[in-house]
Image (cartoon, rainbow, N blue to C red):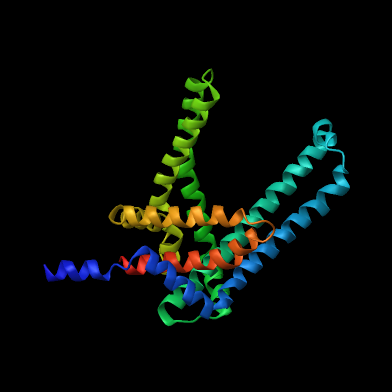
Length: 254
């Protein structure tokens, strides 16, 4: 009895974890650096795409439709840049988790942790991300395709309700795998082991995990409504806080 009460006591509340994440982040603002690097990386990739494609296609979009050779060039460049984008974002994302994990355990971190963690885990992180996309999106697309056949002639309101319900189910399902990248880095796991660990972890803490993701998602949507600076707040404030709160959440419910 005492043991179970102690176990419940050890589970820190969601809002307490969020508050702790904010206060911890303000003491470790260097956690924002990987997010700044990620933004710069995205800008560079976009600039390279435009600089590479524009001399070939010009500004006339019809060139893409009329010239197969041009279309092939655009496709090749796009594929290469997507691969670079996936690799770079995986490197930075795993580095963010590494820094957040060190902050949670030691109270501070260094930028070098981003490079060491990113270099070690980027490939596995990419594999986990792609695997989760397949696991989640394949059933989602199958359901969406089936629903579309039945709702093709229905009124727009019914179609909208169906889409909302499908998206809700998708989110309810996605939560089971959302912690896989964190387990991969924090526990040095392989891809499928981290996915299984995430599923088992969420299965034991489903209500809390779902509540946490709902709070983070709704907060992000609301912040994005702020003109001009909403995306900056999401990037430099909510992003680091989210990384910390997910690490704290895992540690508090081991």
